Length: 41
Image 1: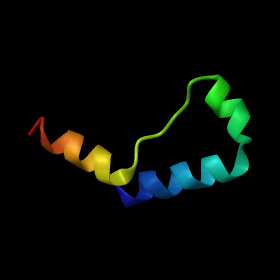
Image 2: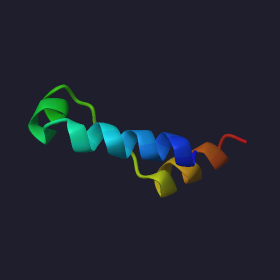
Image 3: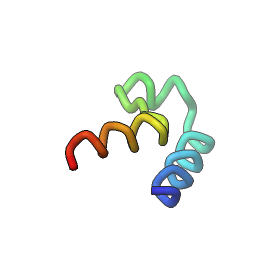
């Protein structure tokens, strides 16, 4: 999971916020993603 979080940070740092937000690409925090994944186990 840490790899995915790092890749997401890199992506967001290299893309203009208005550009990815306009396309609906919003990202969930690592804590929320972990919680959500645990509910399906």
